[in-house]
Image (cartoon, rainbow, N blue to C red):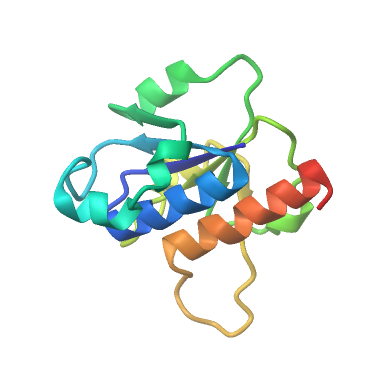
Length: 148
């Protein structure tokens, strides 16, 4: 499984997603630009020692990320604009779960080009925190793939 953060803005959220990747054995992909410096003190504090067990891929752009994908790779965009629930996706080993920046989500040109999934928000609100959304989605994908 791969968790992909498109233009992440907050080191703390990336650190929390890295922790999720560490626990699940998932790979983490970060697509530039970032809203923080990847190797500064704030980021190191946020990820603590969790990056030691995580395969981290940095991509200069969406185009560079796409070029790195193996043939037949499935990328799912998570968005509040989606109609299909994440539990209905039928995740498979090697899938890529894509999340947008904290302040604005995925741009329309990107989310409209990919299968879109949503997390239910029955209580309302604009959206879940990025790290929380990625964690919920990753654990569901893991449950489907590994049968936990």
